[in-house]
Length: 138
Image (cartoon, rainbow, N blue to C red):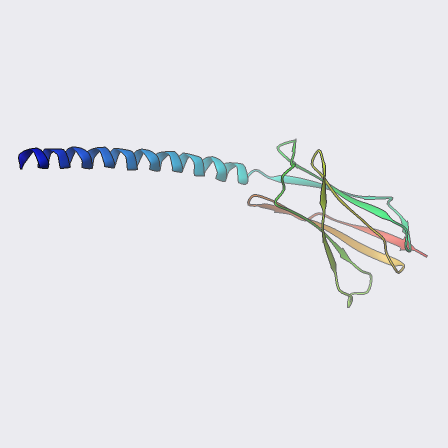
């Protein structure tokens, strides 16, 4: 009976050491992931060409960086286009990763006016949404 009791205590201690050891590794991994996710991101929005005409194709590009490194795996990059008429529906289009941290869409405009372009970029816990305007002429 005594041997079973000693064996039980030894097994309990071994199990406790394993559980505590695994918990510390998980905590270290969580902290590293959290710290990486909290580094600020930058999104450089560009519209090419800078001036457009009705029904002319343009490219809207966003270059995403984090600590001066190109982000090739952003969680979300969406381009929102707000038309000149405030009552009109905003259009949101997911951007395609083109490589080297550049995400882009091609589009055209059906009517003249000033459009507001906003890129919604999410990387980990960080989100940024720079905006620019483009004037579309007849």
